[in-house]
Image 1: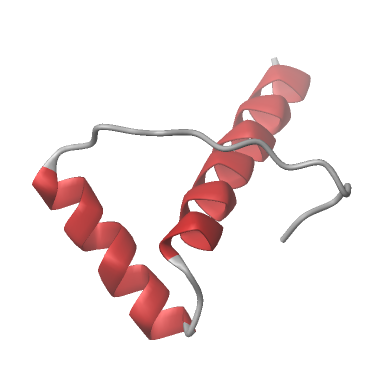
Image 2: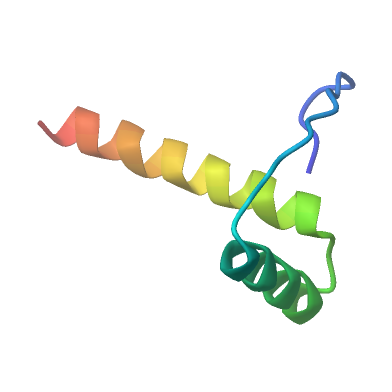
Length: 55
């Protein structure tokens, strides 16, 4: 999950439905909700970068 040795702590307030999704994805992938959140952010960043290149 971590590409560097540096990690920051972040406190979030998220809707209950989003937390439920993170929890379900984590259970399905045998990972943590943090890992799933990081994965989602990285996937979006990659998707946006791809869209930018295609323009």
